[in-house]
Length: 218
Image (cartoon, rainbow, N blue to C red; front, side, top):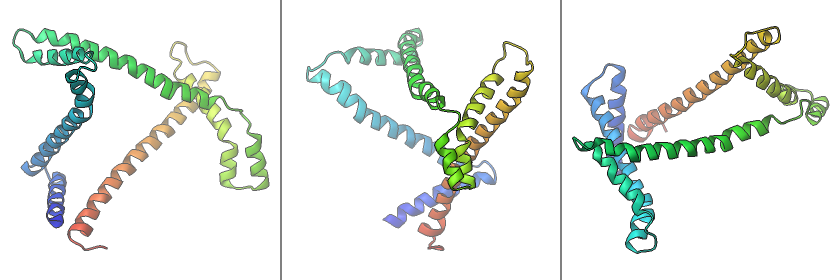
């Protein structure tokens, strides 16, 4: 039975790889299958882990009647399918979007902005790192010693790059290109990380085909 499911997984993987030749019905089938299974899985997980414990059980047992309100809002979303009552769904939809927008702002402010500001409140010269470099000269100890100056320099120059309200003058003509260079390094590192993640997924598929399915490699 295990070999059967491994064969199914290998077949679906080959169907996806067939897109490298051209778009074809096999790839379309696997694409729709993946989207359908993923949507069904998410709905099942949300139903059993969110709806049942947080809405159904408290209301049916009489412990808490407050979940009736979000249930009604959820039902109003289905008014979108009515020919003349589609506008009703805009009310719960606007409430959902507004609530999540507010929560997202608070989450990003506390999870990203505050942490980034706190991370830049550092001494420009780290004497302990320089002492470590003096005692044990090397590339890594040198990079550790200049880490704080690079962070401060990158922060100031990157912020100056986004000052669009004034023309570039003297100092900003120098700091803005440096800030753009820091941005390009950051974007490049992020892109490289994304590519390596995709390569790891590709290697996993090749391992499935040549090791677990065909047994060519150990």
